[in-house]
Length: 263
Image (cartoon, rainbow, N blue to C red; front, side, top):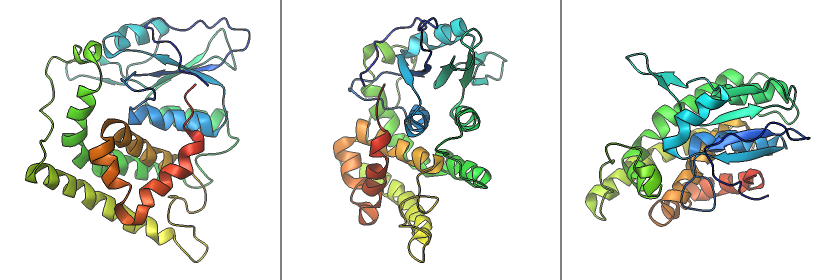
């Protein structure tokens, strides 16, 4: 599998064998970095679906998504639409009227409904997994933002940096302030490790997967955050986290390794 070329023009839908297109944001490394998009990529790989990546720089996102008829992911207070990635275009069932979806949770539920083989929502788990993913986004990842947002901005490259009118705050320099920031991150990891440990032993699992024995959407949401840290803060971030909690997070990343292809 190879990395698709970067362009702001939508891929052709006239291929003899239609495949799903995943719209992603390029960084300055060979692999993707954006956690919300990784959640979708994991599902595509796990379900063994044929897809291609279409790389879109930040300045081109709105025009590109409007051109393919994608819906906004949200609206500003004044009613203006906001277009963000990920977006998928799925022409496999009807090439003349492909399904176009935005927002990772909506995409995840669509892929599960249309391609039920190798489920990422085991029976009866959809509500709990939705809560788990909400927790990862709104609570678990919050202490990471002061560290990771400036680092991610620095690694976007000039073309993408120019899209943002105000640069994020400077990265925290080595010293007590940065160590305090990482300590807040570690508190979240420690709490989640204690929760996942409830699945260890007595036939409930090994304490690595949220559902006990098998990978699910919840694991992919969590591992997407780990990949973000690894790509944008390999030495100061991932070098720390992979050692925390008895190596639990490195084990989860390893469990997800088979589904990290980039097509």
